[in-house]
Length: 219
Image (tube, rainbow, N blue to C red; front, side, top):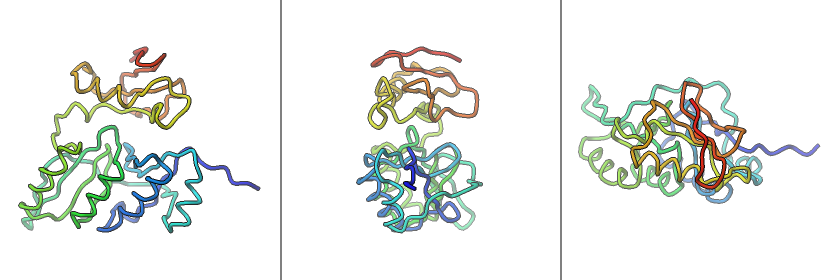
């Protein structure tokens, strides 16, 4: 029997922590099969979307899949000082997306990274000087270190770039709307079609695409 390939694949990350050097095989898999994007869900799952042979490719690369039940820690944003004098950095991912290029930059830091809820990466065990350098380099690349960033409250399905059903580039539209200050609800989710993929479990305002750049708003 031919195995049906999933529209997405969840990666099994032991203890929810990616060790130094662990991002490279994931980035390579994303480059080849998932439009160079990894996704972190609200529940802390590391996910790749693809219309290709993603499952077989992951297995061939020795990347474990299907993590089962998760108990990811709560995601905190910003500078998290520790009693031992070291620093954890909580970095939010805009729309939950981590590009393969950014994933490889995390490997350069040579620090373990914990996958947290609410689309947050916790970069652990840094000296203050290294933490400052990380923020200076990664913030301009798109990682969120400001707890008040409007990007923290907006999410979206994969959109037209990775789904033929989407009627608009919902990710681009969501980022533009957040940057403009037009989103005023506590949580907003953009979807490209009536399937409403990726909708948060919590109450939210929904932007449903009805055409290219056109939306019906509810909630």
